Length: 199
Ligand SMILES: Cc1cc2nc3c(=O)[nH]c(=O)nc-3n(C[C@H](O)[C@H](O)[C@H](O)COP(=O)(O)O)c2cc1C
Image (tube, rainbow, N blue to C red):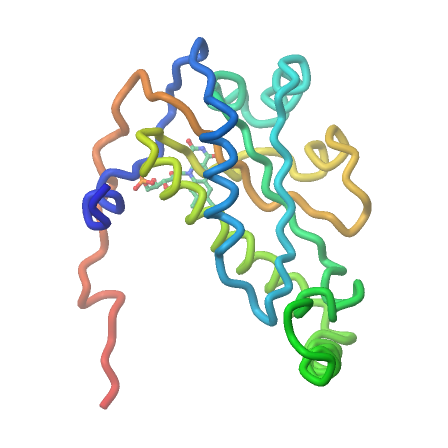
């Protein structure tokens, strides 16, 4: 799909066809593209949990303000972030580089994040948000619709999915075939309000 059309036509969809299922090759393509999203120091903090179990989806819905996307979308992707990615053998994020570069990146990563819990967390948010956008655009490119969601109880979802302590839910991306159009756009702020040029 043409890029401008793709961006304009991605909307947050609230109603999905619950009978539709996606082919595994389509799902593979979504993640192949999503994993190419950028992350600081290439840390790739994101983790993607595709919830296929229907009962579990119902349980998640019950802690997500009963939003129907959770159960009705063809794919429910829970994007979470590993707060400790920066200290888990960081050289592996540079596995294609030479040893000297790996050592350099390892020490830069340590210097940037060590004892900086706010930055560790902010970075996870940035990385997962980047991935969520790629995932939604990749879905649109395949003719699917999506909804990014954070209307849920974060602790309850982490518990339902048995996440380890430092793996935190960031958002859901529900993907599938829409049965209703999106609401009219809420109203975009003008460029003057949000874009500034400093000379
Ligand atoms: C981080 C985030 C969380 C959101 N959470 C929800 C949600 O829980 N439920 C929902 O229906 N929409 C949710 N939305 C969708 C927004 O309402 C929507 O993106 C916004 O109104 C703009 O509409 P558009 O995405 O169709 O352009 C969320 C969007 C973002 C980016």
